[in-house]
View 1 (tube, rainbow, N blue to C red):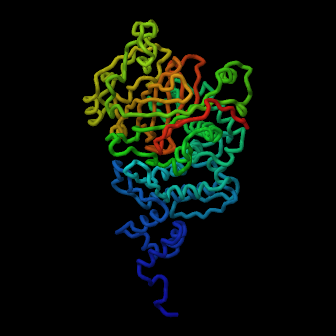
View 2: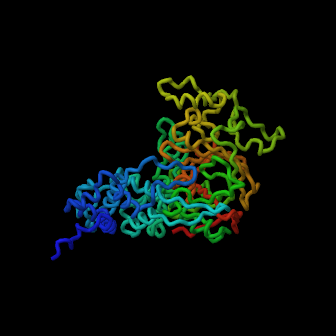
View 3: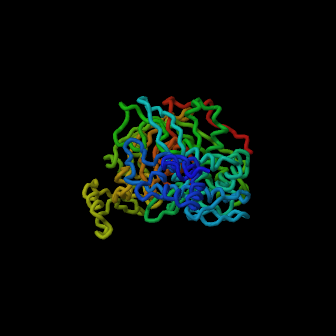
Length: 543
């Protein structure tokens, strides 16, 4: 044997290239057994090997969409450790899967018998992998130029089997599930089991159409009970909405005139940020970080009110909603940005809208709930109560933001309509902008909703898009139809400009006792065509 014919005598560049052919866990095994190889990976002068191992498996986290700030620094070792740890925990949930472990990655020993409960903190890395995926670019026309994402491929492989989907995503039938499973399910879309199980569809309907699941605390939307006024997504509700709407779309799509690329769908690829169509440069609005400007589609699902009553209040209704009848309506939305960061002048009104007998048109009162300043049961809400904020709660940036806020508005709203921001285009979040909202200021928009078998066929709408404290993209929209004012509250699944779109709860603006509510889905058009459907109602073959 020649003394120099040894692996460790090869140049460092070749040793690095050789190690990069291995899975990160195998690299850890090598450096644990050999000090020379360890010095190649743990080089105090450079993080090259950790960076290279990350970029072997994942998209470059430094790449961002236009206008999105890139991270100042990346801790490549910590990033890789967190993601591989999440992969190993996810794989170990299947009892038949023998998973390798490594002290270097600080992974706890895995049992080879029954699966352990989901580790939410560890698995919460998985949605972040999707959020950090490669950003597709756009052609001058606004069309998205496809770009393969290593992050999406990583997640698709992890969730690629029915067994792994059952273990990681589960379904609304699974008792005591962690919220991370519901979130992953909402991002992933329908599983093979979702497509064939009538009970899964029924349980999802039961959650979505049970009216006691909505109220003041949840902002009448798919949100957890409010804490300090913050809207945080209720992923269990969003998962059920995804199942209900996803199955309804599959039953309805053949009667729609939409192209294949415009049909709504939830997939991991569509659920990554910046995958929705962008506006042509001539039509784009500067600062429209959510891509609101342009054409959108919307479907609204609802039960017959008699069936809704029987399920919620009759006391003698059906025991399940497995075979419930739902109506699905398709609409085209044309949205225009009104203002960014500063509420439009007519966003708030304390005046009662003119009544129809006085000769005013219904359009004049599209966005004003029935209220009266002189109403004996009215509550006064001061939306810009600067005096109510203690100096100790403000930092310098917050204090500067308050100095530039619009004039104080006083609203008089009957207590029955007292809903945090339900109708009102201005809410308490405008009063004290957070760090996130300063980077992503509120977008106020207006537009029209066009139905194809409705009377009138065109209705006006208004809304706003906010960045939540946890990075969620929150939508609120109001409209008037059939003599009623309606409000929708929703979350954009996948984050900023995700092609999956917005899952929202619609309800009556007044929120009177026994008022209806249901799910809706809003997504941006990729072809700019007007959606049409051949008939208004569809009787499903409920299974």
